[in-house]
Structures are given as C-alpha cells and as structure tokens.
Picture 1 (tube, rainbow, N blue to C red):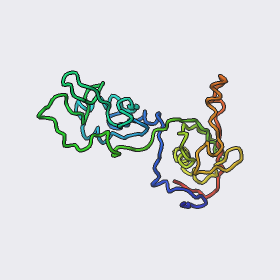
Picture 2: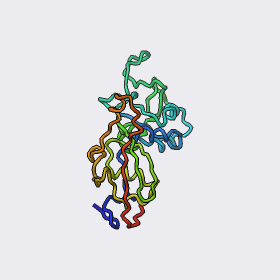
Picture 3: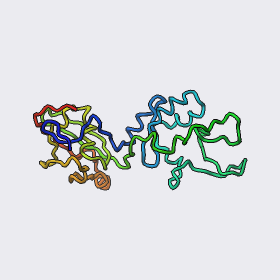
Picture 4: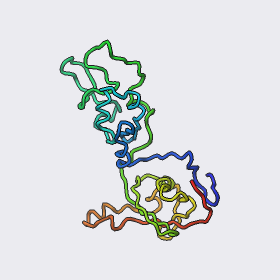
Length: 228
C-alpha cells in the first residue's frame, strides 16, 4: 500500500476503475465517443468508429452507442447470435439492425476484406471494465465545508473506487478520514462490507421514498493537503 502524506492508498495517477454504471455508459453515445456494454462488460468502441468513419457498416453500431447490446450475443459462446439463413440454408450471424462491421456478407463478394484479424467483439482490445449489475446512491458530506454530493455507485465498488468517483468534487478527498455512523471505513471494502446496507428494496416494499433515506458518509479532514 502506497502512502501519500498521512494517507495510505493507491496511486490515483495510475488508478483504473473496475466498474461502470449503465448511466455512465449512456453518456458515451456519439461516434466520436462511443461506448457499449454487453455480457457484463463495458467497451470503448471509439477507436473502431474512428477507423471506419464513413463506412455504412458502422451505422448499426452508432445507433446503439451508449446502450447495452447483450441481446446481440449468445451468452454461452459470447459470439454474435446465429440462425439458419433462409436464402442460403447456412448458419449465419443474426443481425436484426442490418449487417455491421466484421460480419461477412450473405453471399460471397470480391470486395469483402477479411484481413482485419479478430472481429471487434472478440478479445479484450476495447474492454474498459465491468458493467455494474446493481447500483445504489450514497451521500458524501464534507464536514469541513458542509458540501454534500450524491453519487450513483456500483454495489461491488470498493471505497477507494468510490473515492475516485468523488475526486472531481474534492481533489483532496484522500486527505480525509471517511466515516459512517462514527466508524472509520475500510477503504478496501465495499459499502455493504462496511455495514452500509442497501435498503432500497425494503423501502420499495413499504411504498416509501428511498431517496429520502440515502446513507451518508462523513468526511473529516486530516490536514495533510494531499491532492490527487
């Protein structure tokens, strides 16, 4: 564990997030900033869109930018779903939005270039992290400034990852002691592991507005002026 001033923790200059929420993926919905998710992972297809800019086969991918496209895939093979082509009687990729990049044409064509290596959906070249299957809201209150922010976080994110999300609001976030109900939080653990239960389903069952009862984490300044 690295130590910065009074605070031990990861080096955020090289820190990489493990999880992304569906809302975060949805923000990347343009050809010049194109993310999708499928089968539990998030992929940045921006380089692919740049490489094939102007290609008509890119259109079906641009149309689903920022969305989850797991329904395109067979979860067992992790390949594009297939079906029997009624024209040729052969097994072919099922492309409901029309043929897209790296999918072979229905019939042999002289202009079909298959020298691209692996199709874009195979391998981990474009993978940026996991998709958070479940998210929850958490309030973070700076006791020094009385500023409060509500963040949507993945249920499996560690406190360090949540701190990383909070950095745009407070560059000195790692210079604070993070507490919940008077207890120091273990930054290696998740909210649940730190005893911060997700009671959203219980509130829903009682027809209560869970947003009125979002758990609050209190930050106490350590006075070491660490900036990340």
